[in-house]
Amino acid sequence: MSQIRDPGESGRRRALAAMIVLIVLVAGGVWLAETLRRESALEDCLASGRRECVPLRPEP
Image 1 (cartoon, rainbow, N blue to C red):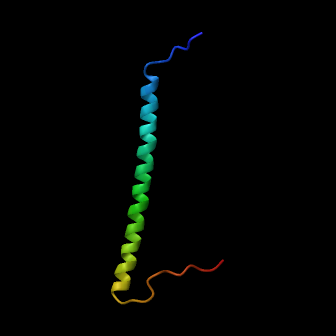
Image 2 (image 1 turned 135 degrees about the vertical axis):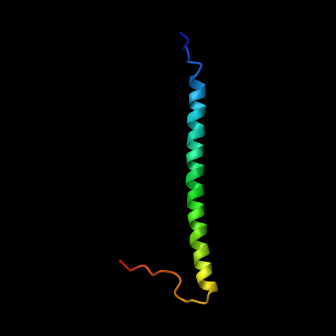
C-alpha cells in the first residue's frame, strides 16, 4: 500500500521551516540590538567620567 502525498505538503513544510528560521533571526536581532544599546549607554556613562553607571540590584 503506497501513501499518496499532497504535492503542496512539501511546500508547506518549507514555508514553516522558513518562518521558524525567520522568527529566530528576528528574536536574535532584537536581543543583539538591546544588548548593544545597553553597552553603548554604559560606555557613554563611563566616558563622561561618572562612577555610578551600572544600576545596583538589591540583594534577595
